[in-house]
Image 1 (cartoon, rainbow, N blue to C red):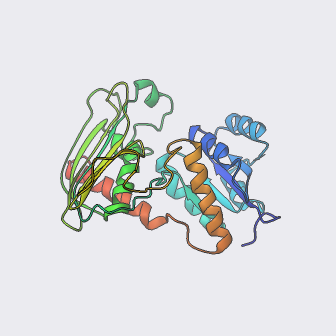
Image 2 (image 1 turned 180 degrees about the horizontal axis):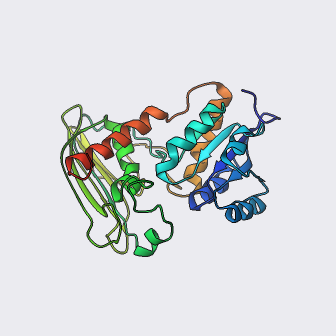
Image 3 (image 1 turned 135 degrees about the vertical axis):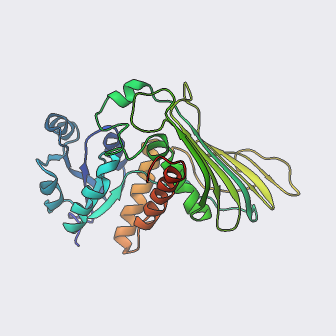
Length: 301
């Protein structure tokens, strides 16, 4: 595949909702990338988005993925449509970036992991679910707090420690008028026999930072919203901010800066002819973990 011209890769956005705004902002300033076209089933929203960004308004998904200037399609649609839209782009010979990325790179001297805890104590008012008919449904959201919010950390845990076995799980709908869960708790066992927990919630008013803590044979660390806040290694004092363990730059995680870094790496991978840093197998493992939790909790067959 050739690029859109001048060494630049053309990006198309399938979907013009909130996350598309993040992607559009992230593409600004990524060398070798430019936003070419956008599409959304809500025509007025797509027209406004196109006018705002200077992109072409593609009247259909087919038009978007067939445009010669579009080399990469960013899938920014409801979760239940990710596969459908992705395959349309793949069939058209385009590269694909699917929302729900991994943004943290963890390298360190913790030894073998022993105990891993991940918490996503977020809050969503009923208005969040009422804002779009697909939210909080099995058909298009695929689940609730675990599928939509907790999947980020499910992905992260699989990437860092390998796909775990679900030992026990519980899901509940406590306060929201939705089909799916607003709280999920899972007990996990990883391939090296480390034990972990993953909790995802949309009932934790007013919403709190995500936390990932890792206890290993040689030390422990804690990440809060992707930033390293504490690390303790055997033979060293408790340190903050990564003094004893370098995770690289974690600034901007969860903002357009985090997406911009990811997109820049994808553009670099395309230019160098190497695989993208996160592939379909990574997404498959995270999805399998979420579905295994639902089955263990008795919420899905």
